[in-house]
Image (cartoon, rainbow, N blue to C red; front, side):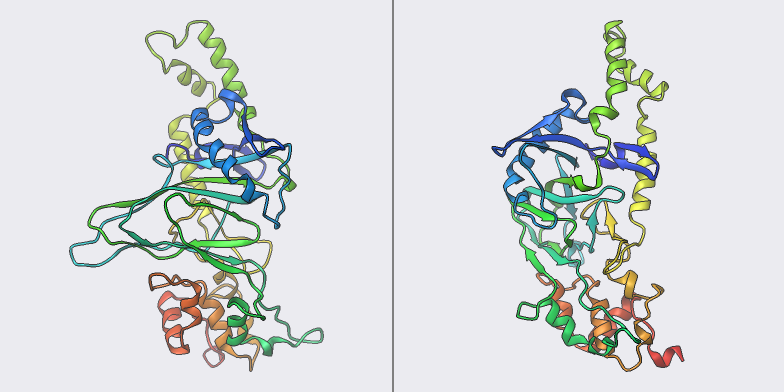
Length: 381
């Protein structure tokens, strides 16, 4: 990555957090990057990449309702990343044995310690040999609130039909969900608080490496307070560097001298230190976490093909502490179907609809294969 948020962090009490850039948004719908040379570690890229994409996304951001962002004469904190020219998904070419080279993402939300309100994605290049790769979204509302005892005995209503009705279009739909096709030039804006998302199966039909390149912007939620911005984090190093340059340091012979002095003084981390921090953060961010409904969330640095437990499995899967199996007499097909929504689709062009259409035997096989099948009542006895 040219711009990797995990290599530009600020230490606070709970641990390292991303350092945002700041943008002033006008009543007329334009935005201006704040901070000049201290707006980001790569201020030119922030000016030429993040600012125009954010400005184009402002009308869509204004339409969000959960949360509803106030954008007139406001200052927004935004984290962006750029890999190669922008964040890039690379799919290798088809292998000689004829097997497909593919990419499948898992459910996640963006941010870890940072409260990301909304995400902006701009896809500026998509190789034509890539097929599939729609973005799928699902609301984070609960489908059923199960209870047993004096207050509620509604567990018997939890069955496969209720799960399907909650997700499919119709009068009984309870959980918002949709798919968005991705093409070159697509600008996508969505709420990170309301929705989880994933990339559906994407296949490279060609024999050479292909990529889908995009810029990602994470708009932080002002309701949770501001993070320390780049112009503040970089201020000490900026003033020391100016003083050194006025003394002639770095002007002749060794242009990297200023950076070396700042690293020696502990004002700026070295490249090796930044990579160590990046690796530690990535390991932490990819730890299995999240519940279908609760204060804990699935988190990730972005739209990756991660080996982590998904958004539903923490509540319902093996070893998660789920007590749904204790409701003797309930329709376990509903329980299994809800678990199955965490499985990646196997067919190109399908998402949650693939799981909803499976029969019980096939669903059992897939859950067993992925190690997600919960024990039955008889097995527990």
